[in-house]
Image: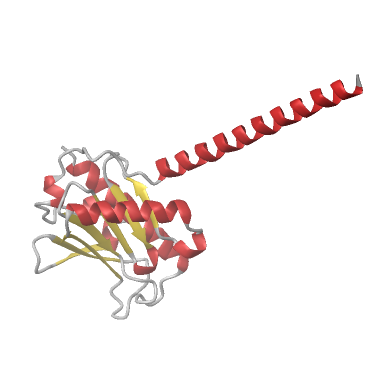
Length: 209
């Protein structure tokens, strides 16, 4: 009788161990699938953004910019650029700059390639999923509100980019590095990152067809 009970106990123990291993494997597989899904770029199909990526001209007015950034019109002045696909503005309230004229906000399209944009998106998503925030140092990538473009930010460089792997160019916005603007605080620099992301979403939504 004792031998029979012992045998039953061994059978149950083996069965439990097998089930535990199965559950552990299932959990590991589920985590792996979730991680792969997190870094998988969006579907390559997208709306028509030709007017933004292919034929961009500076079409943002001071009034529009003030509304998007939620600052007074009087704090923004349009600057003249030699390039037809570049916008230049001076913004007050985020540091005086070395010439006491404020922050330079630059917006322009940059030639690239579909393959490079696709690679860049994949790498940024992979870093976001795998690297600790301390290494990323504020670098981030998020899906635009429109759902078919990505917005990548690098606060240390004072840049925000709009990426879409269906086009041979990308849009970049620069608001200068914190060190390059005299009197800019960390809080003001963080605020500029948020404002630039808002402007990026505005551009994507406005040019979507």
